[in-house]
Image 1 (cartoon, rainbow, N blue to C red):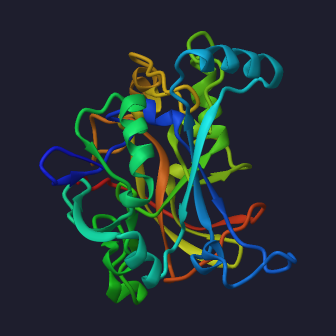
Image 2: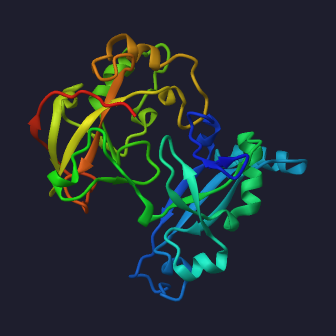
Length: 303
């Protein structure tokens, strides 16, 4: 999040492609290990999030980094760990605060955890070339945002779908065959175009290209899901998620040449589908089978 007047606003690779240089990992405690102990802060918080980013080098560090890269293929990095799901005691002891922030038109309360990484945030400001204040927020479970637009309503499914910091819907599926169709049109421009360009959290293999355009209701493993709408693409896929380099035109230009298919968003290309669970709690595992239970027409509802 960034702010110039303590009014926090979300920051993404749309606004700052250099965010691609920041990596995150989730470490979850393993109760089967001999070192496992409920007295450990990392266990009490159900794990930690590890944030890794390039080190800002000066003097001799530049030479050391070159030697390190020559032998390992990697560059020197900084790492910091923060509680994944901090306890009330950890929130108090670390000075975390509940503050309002802005995501598009929503203004949820969220947990400001910046006090744990105050030094690192100053380094990240330099890395990202951010002039405003920079902060790190965590979703507050009691302040998740309700999803409406093309999502089913509470009277239909028994609950109103929720989302944390994601744009609009909690699940975004991408068909590998559909991405490959786009890549084949960009072999001279972005020959390594892959699903990561489109930032899904569920990747599927098997169906033919664009078969998902008409899906309305599916099952994945043991659970069922409403396919709410198509994904109207912004310019984010132009940013390489590995390098942070933004292409001036592609794949947006190519997508718009043949994927303006939804009358609800006629100026935008569509690729991928937005989805919500049919139940408040669900589980998806790598390798689960997906079955199409119902198809139909989609008309996108913009924000």
